[in-house]
Amino acid sequence: MNLSSWIQTALDFLFPAECAYCHHFAGDDRILIFCKSCWESIPRISQSVCPRCGKPYRSTSVLRHTPDFLCGDCRVSPPFFDRVFSASPYDSVVKEAIHQFKFHQKPGIGKPLAQLLMARLPDNIDWTRGYIILPVPLHKTRQRQRGYNQSTILATHLARRYHLKPMYNNLIRIRATKAQWPIRKYHQRKQNVKNAFRLRFPERITGQHLIVIDDIFTTGATVNECSRILKEAGARSVLVFTLSRAGLAAGV
Image (cartoon, rainbow, N blue to C red):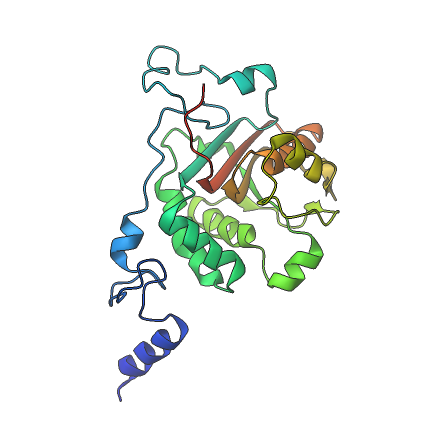
């Protein structure tokens, strides 16, 4: 058996030939545990969305004449972050990929997921601002159980691609909160993460432009609490990047 065959055998052992989503043969051009066809089927978020929180509008023309028009929630209770960008709806292939990434010890999926996010970022981000990128932290107990923080993996790939300064150990989670996914109501999610984060070195945040990165945006309670801590420390701006956005029902 030649070297390439040995390598392929090892890959088949580590990354089974069956696609994790459609369960058909993944093929030689697979993306780790997904076939190319499934991976390329991951949709973009194509709706007109609130330019602050990313919530979709019912009308596709609402931003045509007023591109800065905010949704009702952002007008009534402005979030602490300045803008949210999400790559895909939290459904189908990307949902399975994130599940494998977080809960099935597949940190290698972080690279193609980060590439997916980077390919779908808008063109009007001013990278000359010298953004610092911070992952949403896990509590030390959960990180010890998982062995890695999925948001840190994503942040590392983005930092390399855009020559950003990563800041991994400043924003920390000081309270082991309940998992957010079973909690449906925003006020309950908000209460769950209230005062769950702090900065070890708040002086390093003052005057900086920041990017907070996470895997899923559901109600925004977690990233908003992180953004509150950062803004109170004097951050000039806070962008939020997520792989996916859950609950994409039309809003106003």
